[in-house]
Length: 353
Image 1: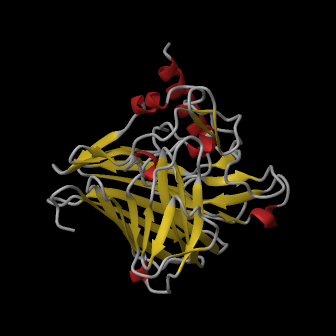
Image 2: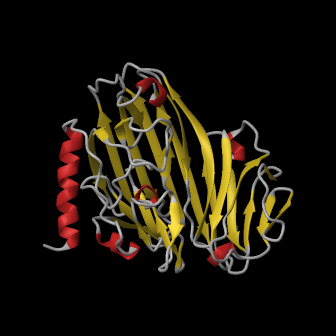
């Protein structure tokens, strides 16, 4: 039996355990394997004639088995005019590293970070109240077991209840729904995520809908990480915002400069350099959740918009990838439903933007 076949067998087994409320720590098929092996796992290719992408649904379990990111609609290889916006930014993964590190081969990411392209992460619910060994909630993953003193997004928590997933697809869309109910924690929800390409436009829309079906309120955050591969080392990359950008943490003056609503890379990152900071200046209107990231040398870029206001804004970059992280608050009382969306408009040389 091949390594891939074994991993798929483990996937179906762990999914069954999750739905039966038995605790488990999901195995990761990418452990110490090349990142390219992830392309062999079940995925749906969507294509509108302008933009194409690979979407990995949560059922059957794909390559992502960890507990940091939303399992629904892991998206890679978003391609427009030959530009791949969602390449893998790591060489391989390993559960033995913290966040990520480098070895002789290149960048090694923890299995919690095995993602590419736009991927959403929700905050935890009820971690402190759960107590040691107790149950807490993470949307898009399920009910997790608290086995650390403090919440750690880079730690893979045992999944006690992964709910039930269903997925439907068309030529241009993938829709996944997770139903989690009857959990002893008192949490319950129905979560639907739709990834679709808009006919006739170089545009992707990611639509989320969350209904609180449990007895407890849901009070969390969500952001889209946007692991983007637009320029090696972010050379010639420019971020534009509809407000004056200010960095909250020190950022090296020989790497980036700020000018009103623009942040520009003066030079590309090399080696193991990392540049990151919270960015400030945004207001309470959803119109401030609107950004353009452009490779000014090639003309390729993307406009990123969301339908909710920004509550926190983080920028993170290393030589292999970059990401803007606009956090949004999600609060639902029992019985309440909330919907929001992300819109990504891709452009390239010769396009009017």
